Length: 168
Image (cartoon, rainbow, N blue to C red; front, side, top):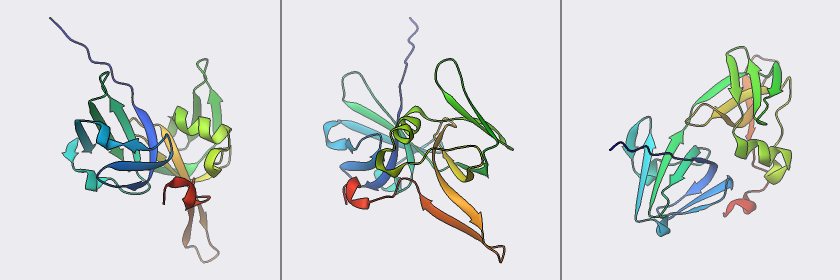
């Protein structure tokens, strides 16, 4: 017999993590106590919960029985400026930069469209650091500007409107 396992991952932007709970500014908090087994991965290696940091983009999959959870941490990013955008026939938003074309994660675009938690939409001309999911989709960004003296200045990661909203 051959078995195919299909997993659906949900994206979350971590604001804080403990051994029993991951607080997320979008994508919903994750109560880890309800799972018998939680596996956390970073760069293909299994790591512990302590590896999860504020600002991480995580992709979470749970099994049908709700007993096991897999969490993949991503800290990958692309620096650039959006030069064009398009939406495909399935409603997936794509953004182009000099380095290539990137799909936007659906959880991020839903929150940005609803202006939830202060998440800003990405427009043509948006310049900054674009954080990617483990699967290469844009899930967050921070503005980057260059000061008069040539020093790079980074803005706040979005969303950071009010930390009280995120379980602090």
